Length: 422
Image 1 (cartoon, one colour):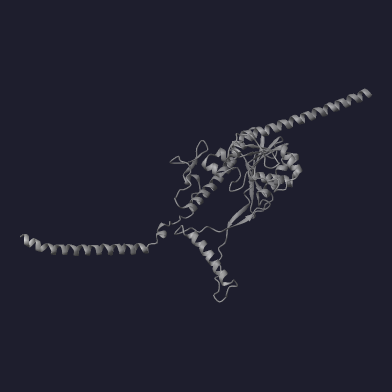
Image 2 (cartoon, rainbow, N blue to C red):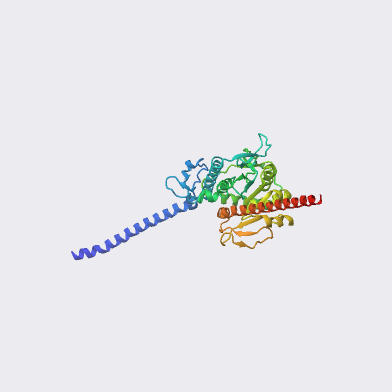
């Protein structure tokens, strides 16, 4: 029995070796087949995502967001803040979604101006025809007729429209910090007429008509040298690759063109136009101006164009982180002297609110806005700006009363002398 087992052992060993070799060969074949399959798969292409269409809700309700009792934008179901990255790795789509929400916010603020603040639109240009693009500003009921005080609000540059300081604050913080509504309601309570300018509404954007460009004829050689043409083709090809590399199905954006609004094609033009057609014609004896960021530059440009008019009508100007530059804007010495006496610029700074700061240019005094965030400078300075206006007006009225008293005293003394002579 033992001899038979010993005789069979080499045979079994050979059989085991043979089976192991066959199994190993099968594994190698499987591995090779798997490698071959993987080599055919474009992993970059696999990681790409189909970019969703740029179609977004048209109302806050459809977005499932609403402003709560504190003026904060919150999700209707979860109560959470607005989330920018609604879809990971789709930045362009997320940005388009954010812009769509921004347009809804703009209309929402217009409604607040009209319903909450009882303001009305004034169309620009004032003599616009039916077929030309137009803009508008907002006026309080007594903006043109208030005999005492008028407040003019000028925002900065960018996507913000009438009634807004910063879209980001409206969406991420609250309506009070991001809109001009607290300034409007406070001004009305204190007896001001109010004008809300709209310096960024400069053109009408319309869709370009589809045009088919003819293909270049194969028989017509290009005038460009071959080497230059190749470099140009490589550059354009690289741009296309960079654009398409992120998405398998990128969405094509609609091509548009801009038709400028007559005499309102820039912030500077708009401020000048509103001054000529509205502010200068208002009945108010005392005009106050508040301008944020680029709005400050537009105000200084207004002074360059209408220096004597502004000096005769404007009592005080509050600037917040103004973007003006008296040297680059070639502002006159007389304007600089007037700004020293009648303007104050609340700038972003880590210092406490109203701390005097050294101005970099010899124009108007600078004080800290009590925040290092540019977009928050107007809101944080809210109360101190109205105090500044009140103090300037009180000083002016005291000065006028003193002048009147001196005039009366002089006239009375003159009559007394005449009486004695008689």
